Length: 605
Image 1 (cartoon, rainbow, N blue to C red):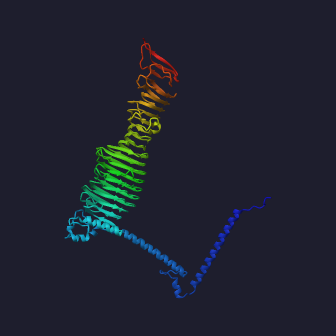
Image 2: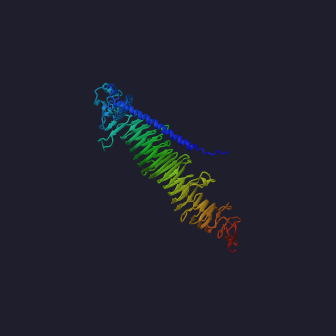
Image 3: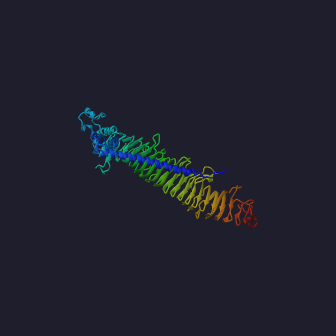
């Protein structure tokens, strides 16, 4: 039997929930009403003075009951204390220590202890590290000010230029400067007055603002950031050090705003270097790096650099020697936005070594050899211009993807790499990984303009789609030309494996016993066999579809009618060794395998 009534459980539950909400609201309203009534009674009835005082706050605010007053005053006190604490911290952070307070002299000149102290013991009372009255006072005073700032958590403010003759170290010390009147009115900092020192080393959570370091051509180093974490380096400028200008060892989770180095570096030290120091430099952001007129070694960025970003790198006027690597840019999961490397007339070298790297705009100008290596990872280059020779390191199996880039000279194996919308003045392809798997290993060129093509190996290969060739010195061992525009005249059009797809060859094709496949393509000249052996093997294997054509076919590998094809109608060949009473060659009357073939041009006996 079916129950005749419909039970709407969901609807009833919704209505019940609505009634509960209304009930609790009514109870809350009643409680608030009772509270307001009591407050009115209390406030409207004269109270003893001590009761009134219990409800009165320090600022004159009257609370309904004493409990509200206590809680309210506690809240006000806590808020006021928090504001005081915040203000105190801000004031302490803003306190700057002037090294002059510790005896430093900021006129850019050398000053010994003997100018200020008559005895060594008197000097040692202030500077325990002093060993002679001939000691430079700035070496001692600056180090003392850095130590004081570290212990008191104050920052050090440099005002003027300090002449130093010893290495200085600052751990967890914020250092900034104001502009000075020395020379060109640049930022305050240091003048190096001795060989064999590193002017300033910072470590820990170092915060540096604007600093300038003058090397005066001493065999010394400028600024060293050593193992910093959560650091921030502002504008660091180094000039004329016969050593490094700026070196960064293993910096993590930090921001480096501006590094500018000029006339620094030598055969042993890069002008600017970012090193892993046994670990990695990672997750840091470099906004600007500039190196100008540097000797031999300009910029080094370790291949072990990890997950970092470089906005702008600019280096020009580098003095190369053809031996040292002038620039090495590396890293894994590292992005470079804008990079310009420019050398003088001498040969410079650039290495792009690491894992996965990308360059949004890379400009390499001058007589520069550029080598890249990614050890199986991918190097991406966009909208770039690369002069000099650009090639892959020997034995590397990485992949290059270049888009919208111009190359002056692109050489090497370039296995599995891809080039799209590139302009290449000279393309020389090397060998592929495997002759049998050449199609999988060959580099791919799409929508490219290639002025000259050459082969550096008898096992070179390439796939070209929608490309235009101005000239080719030599065809590759194996090629696919798909919708390509080829030269009017080829110097050496010898191939082993050639596939033409909607492509016209202007001139002759030479087969060294190779394979030709033509699909909707045309050869204006002849198909020539350059295998002149007595018993050529597979003289010309070819597949030519009905929509393809050849101007004239000449084969120097036959002395009699062929017995196997395929051949196409109109194909004509001349015998290798014609004889009296014989024929000059044969012509294909009907295409097939081998089709209908007739000899022509009988020679008189």
